[in-house]
Length: 89
Image (tube, rainbow, N blue to C red):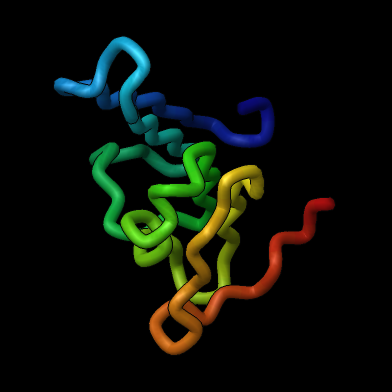
């Protein structure tokens, strides 16, 4: 947050409270943030690996999808989601 002029945090719980799935969008920008709604993100951090198929298409081409590996059974659709590996261990 210190590297950018503006930041926005938008949690989305809807009916997914009390241990069920939820989602949170974080936006950091030097420009004004007109809308918190993103069609594609630079980075997606996925804590629930069972949601891989749902979220893999929400990462911009060539950007980063980080997935919890414990319980990961799916693989990325190589033709539909050409992403580079994340630069993190």
